[in-house]
Length: 116
Image (cartoon, rainbow, N blue to C red; front, side, top):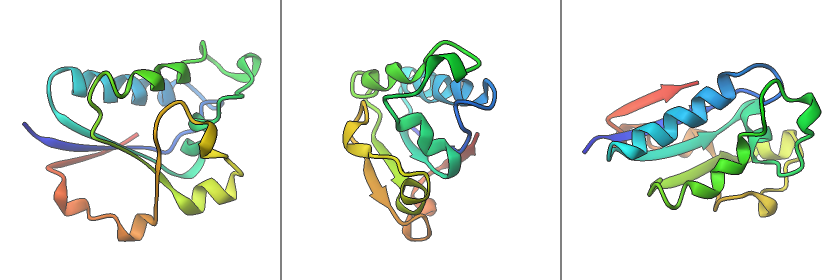
């Protein structure tokens, strides 16, 4: 089983790559990889529960974050600086979030790091 970190840094309001990133997370977890997720930059906007559906280019896909536990997603991190910059309240997130200082995150613990 490979350890994979998927970095999601795209706003859900720009284009469909945010949705594709989340789909990748779930697909990797479904085939029994040890998957962790890091939301950083504008990607922390995917953690907001109050996203306005009319502004999103696709159907609100962020509700699927509730399934992360079912898919045995190992850990869900959010960059503390990005959370502050974008004023995201992670206490309302649909999954458990661990705030991290990205410079302190040990990337060497992962076999693969994928940035979306």
